[in-house]
Amino acid sequence: MLKQDINELLTRTGPGTPMGDLFRQYWVPALLAEELPEDGCPPVRVKLLSERMIAFRDNAGRYGLIDEFCAHRGASLWFGNNEVGGLRCAYHGWKYDVTGQCVEVPSEPDNSTFCEKVKLTAYPLVKVGDVLWTYMGDPAKQPPLPEFEWVHVPPEQTYTSKRWQECNWLQALEGGIDSSHVSWLHSAGLRNDPLFKGSKGNEYNLADMRPFFEVVESDGGLFVGVRRNAEEGKYYWRITPWVMPAFTMVPPRGDHPVHGHFWVPIDDENCWVYTFDYLPVRALTASERQAMQDGHGVHNEYVPGTYRPLANKDNDYLMDREAQRRGETFSGIKGIAMQDASLQESMGPIVDRSKERLVSADSGIIKARRKLVQAALALSEDGVTPPGVDPAHHRVRSAAIVLEQQESFLEACADAVVATPGVPQTSV
Amino acid sequence: MTSMRPTLLSSCALATTAAEARFRIDGRPQPPRAALVVALDAGAAVIVERLAARDWQGARFLRYEPDHADGARRDLADVVLTSADGDVPLSEQLPSTDFMMMIATVDDGAEAATAIGNACTLHGIMTAGLVFANGGDANAAVSALRPHARVLLVSHDEEDAAEVLSAVGA
Image 1 (cartoon, each protein chain N blue to C red):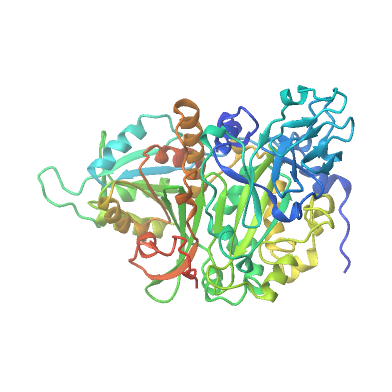
Image 2 (image 1 turned 120 degrees about the vertical axis):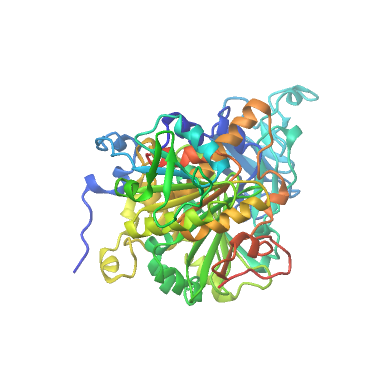
């Protein structure tokens, strides 16, 4: 159980909150690059950390992320025209550039300098990989750009999707740290999902339902090692890195692509789940990429024209009791992503952690919460830069490996958990 | 057999709202976890002593001392644990325990960890190991605890022990 005041601290990320201030130390995904596909394309509404903004790409290819509402009468700039040099409000024609600077107020006389006094809040928006990243903190403290491996490998080696999840960011993140649910909730997926099935690791996973856990601190967050019995005298280890505040990776399976997530608060009751698959040393095959686009693996199908999952709470996640009875899914919900999301959303918009009953197998989650609280307080009280801001902390990988029983997973995998260009993932 | 559509009151769209969360049953408090915390070495004993000074729901705090007062080595067939109230055999503690936390700072308690871990396995008691150490000492302590702790947390922050105990309801 968690005290209610700590739950509040962890789950509220709006402006001026301790956890909101913490998130504002980092570059976070704001949109997929595909949402602003060309110069001068239509603007997109964005809400992050409980702030409403407009993202646009001007005709010179510059990205902007500015306050959604015109400084004049508060109309949404989403209706605006993306013109040469800026976004023009559809109401009275005020025009803003990508820095939020007003560059034209048509009602003012020629040669008026009034517009120079009007500037909307704006944040940097930078394309790294398939993602547009923003930094919403103090410009004087803007850190270097993210160096996560999935956004730095060549485009043919990576695929990223995103989905709207209708609950607080923390209960979604905690699903990424908690790997003990995989043997239950995703058991069928290990056997039949095209992006999971066929690996030797799956056999170990399914044969030992009572794994042992080791939680070790890293410079940027945690490594959670989960071991299961393998052949005589050996253990099968799955190693999950968490980089603060919201990046997790799933240990790989066989030669399948490596996947993971970035969990980004939209507001306190919704989050974006950025989901990626990549390979360090080879291109994704056409069938792998197609499987991802079709919603297999950790991706999902969509309500057409949106990033809302096709299976969502308004249709009971397309619950299929017959498939559940036949053992094709454990929960009756199709797909690993929605199996997770459906249960996390079922906990409510913000789960009341004062009523939970944790067990020691939840130590990864317990430790992660503590690190978040410590970092938020150290930031607010002493201005301490939190773990995970330094791009060196981003260069991690998940790993899956069979080791002799006496071996330490972190010593044995010291190289495997570091993202090294040109070196394949360590996988079973 | 065709699947039935859910009725409105049980649909996820309604059930997952914040408003509906108000109707969750506010059940009676869950009984506390019957936790036994054992310090495996002298450094751990200091941490456990500080932990024991806090308010808990019946958690017990003991330490393992490998030697008798006269310097003779204790018999590990039934580990003897020590507190301010005197010595007590592990076998007397286990029937009233459902969660064993072993704390180590070095590998001095490796033999005891083995004995305690095996006894817990026989009694179906969940085990957790917390290692608070720096540098090489941690590696030895982790190796000693690894086979016997279903959950092992390696940390530089002794408050983690209190966090885990509190989270599991000890």
